Image (cartoon, rainbow, N blue to C red; front, side, top):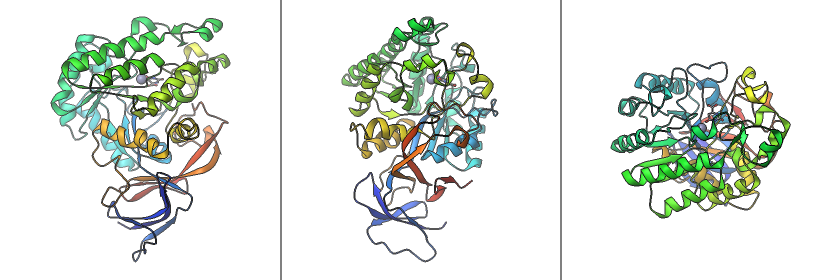
Length: 430
Ligand code: DOR
Ligand code: ZN
């Protein structure tokens, strides 16, 4: 393994320093480090260094919808976005509800060799919400599953949710809930509110999310297990989470970049690229989500990268699938909404996009500090860069980015995973 001397990078946007990566770890940190014989050099003047990002919520679509994304193409998009680990959601075809399927996804991730692909196991068999999947077998498998989710669907049955929470306690697993009371969102097309009323589209009320979160924090508190709430999207959800945390409940939560930036008014374009589940909400919700993230009520930014084939997205609003790409733009949107708004600093971004997600996912060699002896998984970002989002240039197999044509701040220049570059000069190495 070749050593890398990174010159003049600013960890968390602090004072610039050199970092020597050797044998997969950060061997030395300090100014004016000498390059060992044969070491590669990288001039990182003006670049910010952060620990490699960790995504808690990625849809890689393999097996089953390789036309929309594969483990390899999604891994490439992730590396280009600064990620060194992603959690691959279970709503594939077949569903990742057995040791066999999660091991297959894990192996495909190893073969792609760009990020650590951590499969998420389904909570219920076939995501059908009727009986628990083989949680223990998935935890014991080579994929070592710790996060379980029926994402895309809610575990709506309270007794089943309770049993899942009890079950994962044995191996310190976590149930990641897609909070959506299905009886309240039947036929829903967008956020319930003034815009939906104007457009005549069926609404998805905030209460459908909040009711499930309230129920589940009570259940998690009761059984003493870890609950994680996926893609929190409403101001009321933030309030419930804040209350639950003051009670000492073991609950964590994530928000997506799009819920930090985009509002339901975009539905007025009738462009299904803005259709997502949970739906885009209001400016008041966005303000509460940003504040909740800044004060730690929300633990993480997670992409909910949801690639869809053209025929599933470029159709009329009602028929389009919900979901947006996110891996290649997440850090930029976080910088725009959190750093440039003055709400958080770069260390805060590292905490919410690497440190805390790694802890929630049970990853021991990710989300670590940029200090000597720690794993050399890191991302170098140009904070001054501005770049126009071009869907055609995406490494994803899909094109459904809601940021097409927008200019975003901050660009990933290089990503290193355990001392090896996966991205250099903004280009994936494989
Ligand atoms: O918008 C979404 N897309 N929300 C989900 O919960 C699932 C996801 C998908 O799988 O496409
Ligand atoms: Zn979801």
